[in-house]
Length: 107
Image 1 (spheres, rainbow, N blue to C red):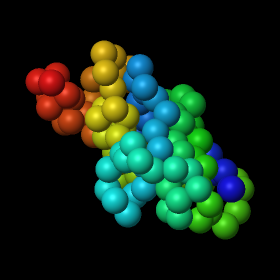
Image 2: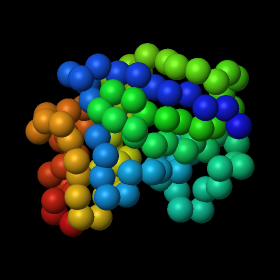
Image 3: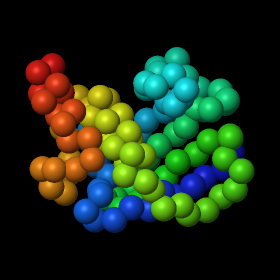
Image 4: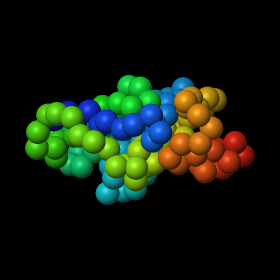
């Protein structure tokens, strides 16, 4: 298992929620309750702050830090939104993936 800390900027923040930890397989393009960390391609994602996010995956080749692209931040934020039950926590009302809030509010 390898770990990467994704780094972003305050104007491109990660968000969190009442269910911040996700286990998903990007190949399946959704959070999958049947996924296991042992499955090839599955990733454990934990937002640590608005600018740091920890990911664990068997497919990573090295441990370390990596600058995060805006598309990655948006994808991770959408997963956090989809898993949230009662609360989404963000540093501002506009963040990568914030357009997903409207659908979440309708649930």
